[in-house]
Image (cartoon, rainbow over all chains, first blue to last red; front, side, top):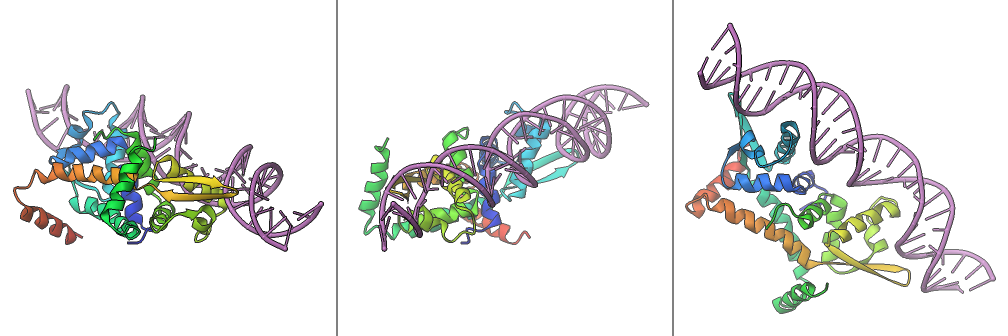
Length: 114
Length: 114
DNA sequence: ATTATAGTTAGCCATATGGATAACAATTGT
DNA sequence: ACAATTGTTATCCATATGGCTAACTATAAT
């Protein structure tokens, strides 16, 4: 996987915002309209729509308008693409450890570093 | 996991840049100094150092200076924290599918949507 | 036909981001 | 001592981001 990758750039950027993550989480439960999605947030609609725009142009969601209502749904595949990046990183850095034990030890060690 | 979470904000933001993802990938292979990490990039050192700063303040890497050399290492746990967010999302949206087959069908369907 | 609903478009604004250069430490090598 | 190496600090700059309001369009609903 290429790190110099627009897809990952925009997906990670889209996820770097609590409003947008919350939208993703909500859409994980099922499709929803823009105003349904916007309801929990204390934010003007045009501002909220920008978040929808960022999510959609990142490929994490998709939407279509029927009548005056725009309905959004999550795109499972794009989330999977991002996870794949993590899988690949893990493969790389797990090579440094002879066995799973030393890896787990490092993970546990980190918990006590602060 | 709370979506309104500074840790995720800064980690996702840190990963939303190809230079920084490449640094993470390189550090996955082992610790390295700032100038070693900077070498592949056509970028002034102060600019590159900002990326290191972003990565470090996100908790994805850690560094310490010995003499005049600053050595960086990856922090496995923070990457794992981010992956955990994906795990939780997957748990949520997998509830919508009765079985793995319909899930896989949607994933395959997405491949042919363009 | 009016009115209410659901988005959209167009600006505006403050701050953050990602890059640069120039000048300055502080170590290390000769 | 002097020079080279390795970062660091201080500005500066253009653009992007995330919020707002005001005014608008298009589609129901009454």
